[in-house]
Image (cartoon, rainbow, N blue to C red; front, side, top):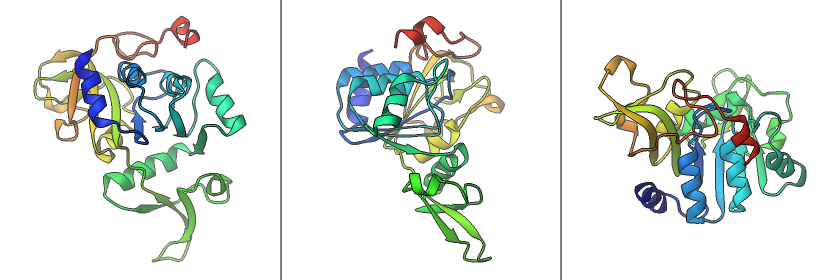
Length: 237
């Protein structure tokens, strides 16, 4: 897939923060992940709210120095993720789903940080330097100040795009809409081309920089309604 390799070669520099769309075992951008591994880009920082095969594959490459996530699982806890958590190599930055979404929201709005009401009284601020307890300037009540998480590139896989470049998603969008607005560059791989249906657009072409056809591009994770995740393929990661 030379076009995808060329796009990622230009978009992802050593040390870049790469965000992966989808959630758990659905719509992981595996065609892009494999292309990125083949490029051999070093010192990658990876963000995935709910990771699976994407994070495991990148961890297996040896090119990752930092992972931001609320959790990584295959059909059970992902082994490379477990090792990273236990050894501290690469660095793991732990998020809750809510604070991860807030960090993307701050980036999408062009803010340095934004207040978030949950997570107070937990260990998260001690584990995650992107989170700091602060006082709301209007009420004085305690909040978490969530620092913006700005991906250099977001990798997203969807069932379809139309000829105008809009993306269509059947099922849960997870935080892909926020990812597309937070990242400096957005690369979308897709299963098939469809006619434009404005009322069904999940991610507007306004937020997408590159679209590349990649049938089966989420395997071994699933891409509803085209295919389910492949348990055997997950075991072979």
